[in-house]
Length: 511
Image (cartoon, rainbow, N blue to C red; front, side, top):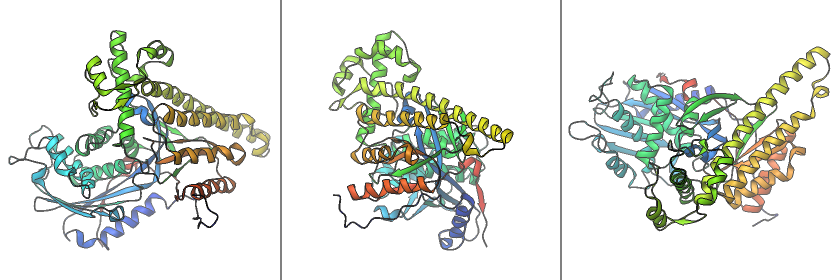
């Protein structure tokens, strides 16, 4: 649908306001425009949690892979105030633009029985997700339910007596674009859970908080996500990549982004969902391959992490895994799937060989990417010392190897992008086009690599690039050409911020 008469949007790759400035805007909103939503007496607890860019690793999380995640500047915000009755009144600002009801009132009776005990999670899931226009509230009410299930008056430990007895006013606002593959749902879960933690005085460990949020999405909402999104939203650091080995959630630290490197996102405006058919089919296919290896090897990979096997070892079993297999055939030949959040559809056709191979190969790419980042940071430090000793301009001391390292990192990103499409069927024409437009401009314009991120099938493309106005111009050209060719207006995602824990939950003071 390319046309010269199209009105081309203006694209900016300048980061938005810093986190403290944006938080002050949310506080003012709570005190002024939304003051009538709260009573004028009770305290209000608040929290913010960012979305994330999946730089490398992606869907390898459910196979135990290592992932590299950057918390973005855009965040979700939650304000929590207890009520004297048993109602959860939840308002999400701006969600009506997605065709959804902006306010939902729920009874605590949906979450607890007559004795105040948490209801079975299957009942809660059904009650909160049956209406598509209000299903979004499951992400918020689910936080209340999961904390209640863990810390009710029927469990050991210090408990806030209001859990299960009192309702709450809960206000949500989010800058994280939904359906863009940058963890808008995880940001809302983490912001809500952190505000609830502040309101109750119940402070789980940082990783436990993230794990509770994952349980909200897996069990209450019913989306089969891994834990990387919630951990990044909770524990990420500004301008660093959170390094997480998903076995199940070993935090290996925060890798500083080398000086001169930059990661930006371009939202294709093709909506992504972790509950979508392609993502579920890829995940089920990977676990099928895992189960077949377990049986054929006589007991390998019993911890259910495919990436515990090297690509060389996988090659010995590769041909034993069928290229294609129906769900019914798998159940008849191999039995149950070793995955607690997905089920085999007997009528569906799966590709277990390719889906099992991807996370193993991609995990090796991730570790190569980390090694390159380490080398790039070392080279920068060596260059800085060289300049100090010789007193010459930095440009004169810039070795070609630094550009080479960025090019090698970019090649790994392109390889991952291709594997998403060819092995997992998680590509899309639109994200393929964005990646190709970046590749065409290449290192000569400061663009080194790109890949579809997260769960794929649309969503956001992550770009590795340099800083500077000329690079921004190249990125703007990518967006403009994409718009001309697709009719879609892409959305730049720029900047970084601390996760919820580092930013801190806060009491919102009136007046």
